[in-house]
Image (cartoon, rainbow, N blue to C red; front, side, top):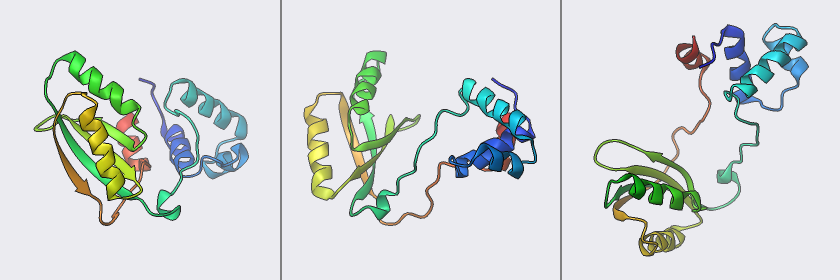
Length: 161
């Protein structure tokens, strides 16, 4: 793992909030000249800590949709069973995120669909696909309280320094 210092953490913190910031504005914001700032960014990219840049799209402002969390337990627990399910999930456009978890269930999925009928059609396709689904539970999101993928500067410091 790459060793980061406070300037690296500051760069990551700023870029998470504003990936379109100019190199000059970034260097001014963290009090570092542009060339060393750019070299640090390239080092962070090369190390895979900065995985990419992109627009964060607010589907909440684009129209009606429903967010659903689905707990999944698969029938068998051999390596090939997990591989089969995980491979299938990669091709499901409705699944925004999927985590393998320990405990009572095997996976937690975050799903976005236009409406409940579309979710039911999704479930029917999953059940018909024979990917090892044993049991599932559905949780419909009624209100977003907090949604973020930004790691705070203090958390970044505790992880990397």
